[in-house]
Every structure is written in structure tokens, then in C-alpha cells.
Image (cartoon, rainbow, N blue to C red; front, side, top):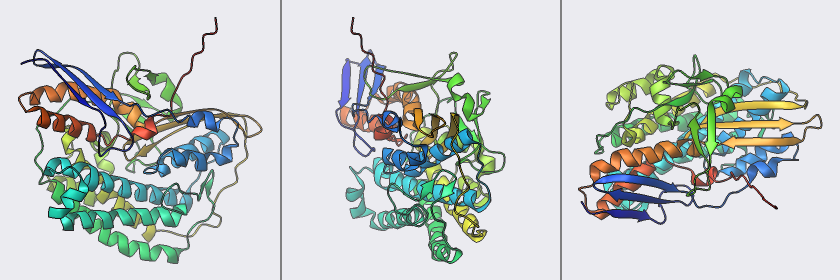
Length: 430
């Protein structure tokens, strides 16, 4: 086979701007580069010198699709720092808010970004001409997720109602009742979504991934849990930096994360959660997974669209559970007083684990911040997928080979903009 290089100068149907380069020599993929060229956004630098109470509103601007994940990681890290625990109805409302984000983000990916790959369309608009009912269902389902963010977060994009210690305002019970009725429809729509995506034609490709996820004894992970892997890792968020390392690569403005001590690339996100936390899914979500042929484990990244559909069923189910058991809290938040120290937290963004670390002084001002988004953590694993899998498609024409390469990237639902706010600047004035 002649040598060739496949370049995709601008990846479509992903969040943010990136590119892809594959170098093929002697019938093998020799190099795969997921090029993130979007400029760094310096959010960690913006946070330095700001009062810790401003953090939820600042970090929400990192992402327009998963702002709740950034807010939840931030408030949990800062509450860890000041020694505050948020329990009862406030903790439940945080799970409900995360349900809204999972629904709107997963459904956007399933219907508008990834399904066109399997059905042979350039995008969701073209797909709607032949699959209008499905696209309408997806848009209506996404709207229900957005309405949860609107009610609890104050607005659908970049919510403003989250604070360290709880919320600025909590909803009355009667405000949640109309939402419950919409969620009952959404749960049925999510079931239809799972059955629909299960009919797609999936390449038979699997790898022995190192899965990394939060794990909680009784709950499918959103905000809390230990960081675990299928290779024996079991640590608190405070130990993250001891076990993970980030490095620069020439072709990306985002850092690549790897496990230390030779652990290498790892996968975080829906596949990791599903494989490591299946027992914590609701009975309906487990039943759905079995019905559509996933069983209790899945190592085929092209089937991640099915796993996202199962997680959408779970998010609707969990949101209804929270609403049905909701009791209005006496206060919207618990008191928080600053103290110097370092706080840590990790939560499960729709695309995977999101880690935050903050150092503040006695004056409550942030001295240092570290934010590690899931796309940075998955980049090395994504490139390994391209090298492993695309080699099996080399007999395809170039156009189809490019399509497979782009589909492989979209398996990850990468949030490129989220990943580009890291930069280490070394100045040599000698």
C-alpha cells in the first residue's frame, strides 16, 4: 500500500476547533495527531486573586454545554477546603442539576453530532430531511434537560444560581411538579432513543482500556466518589496529582494526561462509568442496557452512543426520583467561612471526570487553581484508538477512511474549547 497522509483541517460536529492528522506508512498507521489549535483561554490565571465565592460564576464560562460540571467540581473542591459538607435537599438538588446537564449534553451529541455518522449524513440538518421525527424527539428531549438548568441554575447557559455551600435560591416544591410531568415523557423518549441507536451499524472494534471514573457505593457517580480504575487505582480526589501527570505535545494547546509510573493513557467518560459502575444504574437503565444488547460491559467505543442513551435514561429516572422525594430546605445554603488551605474535588462531566484543585489564603482570595477537563485526559487514549482502529479500515477509499477517522474522534464527544485553557509559559531572559 502506498504511503499517505490524511489531514482533516477542521473537524466538524465537535465542540470547539481542532484538526486531525494521520500518517500511514507500509500499510500501518504510524502516527495519529488530534490537533487542538484553539488558543488557550487562561481560566486558571483569571481565577488567581479573585474571591473564592466568585468561582462558580467564573468557571461556568469555560463551557456552554457542561457549565454545571465546572460549577459542581469547583464548589465541592472549595467546600472540601473550608470543611463544609452539603447534605439533604441541597445535595439532592445538585444531583438534579447534574441530571439536566447530562440530558441536554448527551442528547445533543447523540442526535446532532454522532448519529449522522452512522446514518450517512453530513449533519443533523441533512439527517432531519429523512429522520424528522427522530430529530424532533431529540430536540424536545434536550429541551427538558435545558429546563432543569433554567429552573435550578437561573438560566440554561452558564447558570448563575450555584454558590459555594448550596444555591442562591432553591425551588418551591410546586415549581418542580410541571418539570416532573415533562420528565416522564422524557424518560419514554430516552428509551426510544436507546432502541433507535441500537439499530445502527457498528464497527466491531474493541480495546483493553484502562478505565478511570468516580465510584460511589450506592449512586451512579455525579458529584462524589473515589477515583477508581479497572487496574487497581482507588484514591481520594486529594491524591489525584500523585497518580496522574500532564505533559505538553507539539501539536496541541491542551495538555495530555497519563497515569504515572508507566500507567499510560486512560479512558474516562461514559464507557468508563458504564463498565465500572453498572451496578449503581437504576433498574430501568440496567434493563435498557440489556434490552438493546449492551449487557453489563462494553469496550467498543463506537457503541458509546448506546451507552450515552442508557445514561440519558438513567438521568431522567434519577431526576424523577429526586423530584418525587424533594422536601424544601430551610435555607438555600450552608454558611461558609474562608480559611487558608488547598481543596480538591472531581465530578463526572458528561464527557468524563473533571478535576479541580484550589489554594486560597485567609483573605479568601484564590492563590492557585488547577482544572483538568475530560478531553485533556482522553486525548492520549483517543490517539491510540486512531492508531489501533484505523489500520483495520485502510482498504477503504480515502473519503471513507477520513469519515471513519472523524467518527472515531467523535466517539469521545471531545470538548475542545474546554481543553485549551492550559499553558505553561517559560521565559528565558539570559
